[in-house]
Image (cartoon, rainbow, N blue to C red; front, top):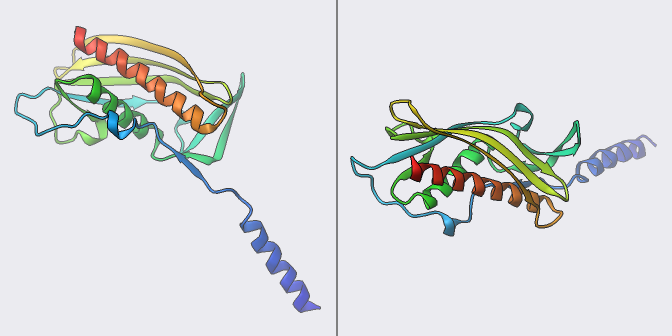
Length: 193
């Protein structure tokens, strides 16, 4: 009888361990073929550093956060960013700008410790919402500064990108496309400064 009881407890414990779905990971990085190749840097090369990037504290976590209603969000435990969200955004923007601004080397803030940038781009993201089965909503204020810390250009990017489908992959893709819009705004501002 005791043996049967222990066996039941043992089976119950291990049955509960195998029931959860595996975690899925998402990235905001563009496809590899969209990132421009770079050679070595000359002493007079223009260097653009993207960052720091700030995001709302509620979104600054490894899980995807979706908007459920006007004042409700849901943290999706099984759907996670491949890297910290700030790093994902900063690296993805640097990669996109690298493709759009051909006469400069573009790098992410965290990777720029050995470089002396000519231009720094500061980004304050106020909205980076995922709305299930609908769209991604993105809003950011940005400032382009020269190496002497003078602000050359300030701007605002606000877009809503429809999700291609109702999956979380579709929503992450919509967020990635929102970063495309921001990168295009930044590239245009860099050309006109």
